[in-house]
Image 1 (cartoon, rainbow, N blue to C red):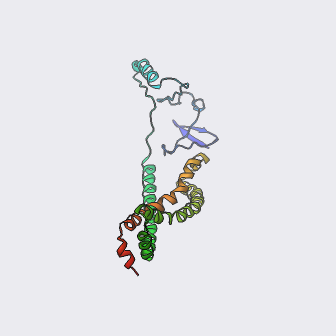
Image 2 (cartoon, rainbow, N blue to C red; image 1 turned 30 degrees about the vertical axis):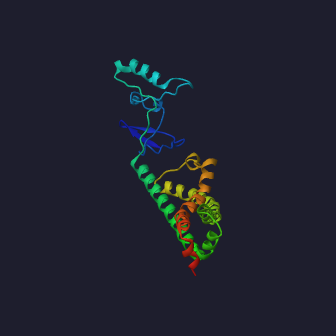
Image 3 (tube, rainbow, N blue to C red; image 1 turned 90 degrees about the vertical axis):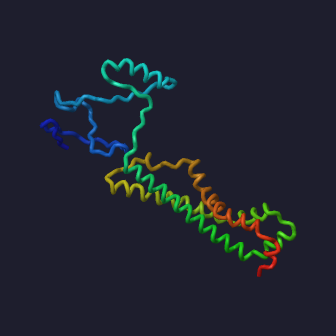
Amino acid sequence: MTFTTHGRPVTVRIVGEVFDPHVQTNELLTDAATFPSGTAPEPDTWFVKLKPGTDHAAYATALGGALAPLHLAAAAGAEHGSSDSITALNSLTATLTVLLVVVAGLGVFNTVVLEIRERTRDMGVTKAVGMTPAQTAGVVLASVLLVGAVGGTIGLPVGLLLHGLTVPAMAHSAGLNFPSSALDVFGTPTLILLGLGGVLIALLGALLPAVRATRARTVDALRAE
């Protein structure tokens, strides 16, 4: 491809692309030696990688003192700010996740409430023969464990499949090509936690009905039809 810099045409060969979500501008990265004589821009930022065990703060302080006469500054562990679009995308993803968790929890809540109402007399009988409130809550919570485990087992591979399809499609619509490192973001501990998420949501959804079941009067439960 041929570009124009300082009024001079420069022919370059594209050999790859750099993935940097924090910099969303059209940039061309090349060696300064490829510029025509006298037109190469001077660098204004340097990145230094220190050897393991080096005190970053002390190094930055010493380097800053040496660069002060040149009106330059040194900083340790400088962070790159995220772009507005990525921040908005993260916020949208977090909001959708919370909404999905709430909807799933309400579904479990509704199911458990109906089940308790259907078994009110049975629970009254078990209380009358000595079942404690803790045991009553345990029975209610245990009834949703299988549903939560099945939901997590099915939802995890389906979610990973959708992630592998939708994220690259979203990136392509924005003119980006995500490398594999940007897609393979779920490690084994994260996958285990996500799989247990179905059980956790089921338990949270059944928690309030379980507490109400423990507080129900035995006499009223025995009178239920």
